[in-house]
Image 1 (cartoon, rainbow, N blue to C red):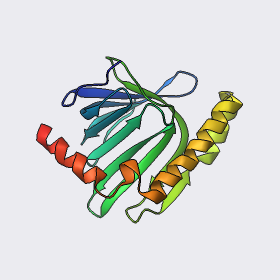
Image 2: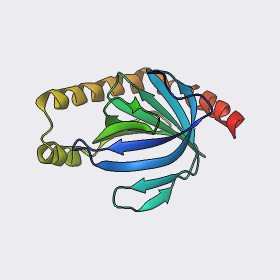
Image 3: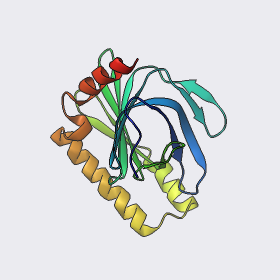
Length: 175
């Protein structure tokens, strides 16, 4: 299966382990789309929560998804630098409806100076019990937390110094 076409628009859908829809980003511009990597961008896009509440993103963001890694990365361009929000998640799948993944609650917030904080460990433990995550999934998720921390420290992939800025420049050509 090929990925989405650069320049096209896609919806992003986040689910929970039990299959329940969690959150939907209405429209993102595809900057790169292969079977393994999708890079998208959005700015002031509508987000709908599972309970029906909606909100609009506040700043431009570059979104990085990989089909082999259990995380995705959102680089948000703010006045004081690039902030990253990293979701520990299943690898993405793309069908003609949307890019989809399972959100596993654990998140890492990365600041412009590349310091970071692991978030939502309590929520993860609650959902792990409630949704009965298999031990193998738990192990995979924690291993990918470590991979992600390594990427942050090494400035690898979406954390490379020019990554977000270069993809944002590409995004501007589509607007």
